[in-house]
Amino acid sequence: MRTLRAGRGTIRLVTPRPPHETGPAPRPPDGPDPASTRAAGVDVGVLVAAALAGDEDAWAEIVRRHTGLVMSRIRPFRLTPQQAEDVAQTVWLNLVEHLGSLRDPQALPGWIATTTRHEALRVATAGRRAIPVDPATGDLDRADKDGEDGEAGLAAALLREERHRALRAGLAELPEHQRRLLLLLSTDPSPSYQEVSERLGIPVGSIGPTRQRGLDRLRRTGALRAYVAATSATTVGAGGRDVLAWG
Amino acid sequence: MSWHGDDGVSRSPAVWVDDEDLARDLTVALAEEHLRQRVEATGLGAFALARRLRALRDELDVLLLELVHDSADDEPLVALRDRSGDAARTLVFEGEGAGLEVELADDQVEGQLIPAGPGHVALEGPDGPLLDVTTDEVGYFHLEVRPHGPVRLVCTTDAGACATRWITW
Image 1: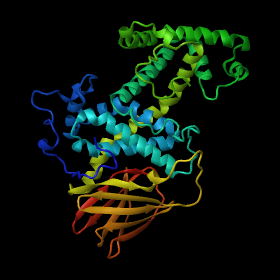
Image 2 (image 1 turned 180 degrees about the vertical axis):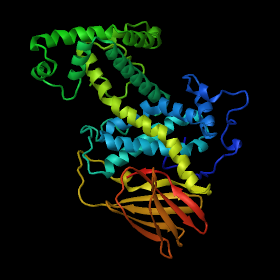
Image 3 (image 1 turned 135 degrees about the horizontal axis):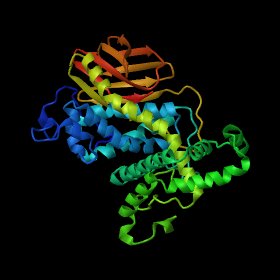
Image 4 (image 1 turned 90 degrees about the horizontal axis):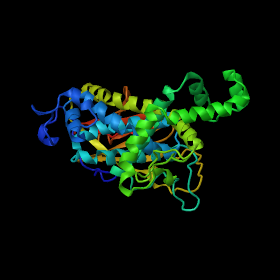
């Protein structure tokens, strides 16, 4: 895998690239049509080859699959939203030009993870920001640790993304009064019950019970049940342990 | 927050142990959605952007220079450092037979083409060239500029054209 420091090779930004430089020939006659690259199951190598051949849908699918990974590598540095967006854009722009020199498409998640982390670190360091450091070890607080840039890191990022998507979808399933209350209480910092009472026009005494009923109902929404079922099936089965016990 | 970091896959985050866990996770999910959409949007746009920038260069054969040194990587990380002053950041880019050394300060870029020789240097943002300058006879240049976001330098000399990888200003 190329890293920023080791990356002394040359990349010619010439289009179109000859197929022999890009691994599999872009979209062979019996290959998938562009529309099918949106399908979740399409191999990343196929996506990379199609993107190199100019297929914007394939590129979009690459981006969608790795947005969670980019987010997860930026997150520990506590950048401002604008800085985070700038770092992401830098990563994507470099990725467009790096695609052609990617020998093994399976190395893509690792490349994205490493590049994003380095870029975020640079922005955090170059700016005049206090960087959170673990006082015990002197390490950047969770930020610059290696070892999670491969498949495990990607899987964790995707799982997190999936869980949050389910939570948002579940919230949308709730009745209006519960949804509005949970939305309001989920702002950071969360408002006092007095403020909530004023903004939603409900008695302070009903906020706690409504919140609890809302959270109960959220757990039972189709979105969350589907997520829990899918995740439990893949992560609990083997050991036969109750996932509840894992805390 | 319970799952704010990067979860190991072996520890299933599927079940929220209590209402507080669930509520915290919901807060994070909602807070991150906006940024996530913006991150994805910049990604979706990057493809067309790169293509347009390439077209601007008339399909010129451009050598991509990789970042081989960044002074931002050198500085020892000490607890809660809050740096002040105007220390410049030094970057070295290299490709096959060509290179570029630059010093970034808050409102200017100084640089040197390698090998030393006259040329033309343009600072490029995602939306296109921001400004450009002709170097002196030994390849030194100076740009007064204060950009933000992703930028790169594109150099043209008798030997050909090269572009640095993107960096975040």
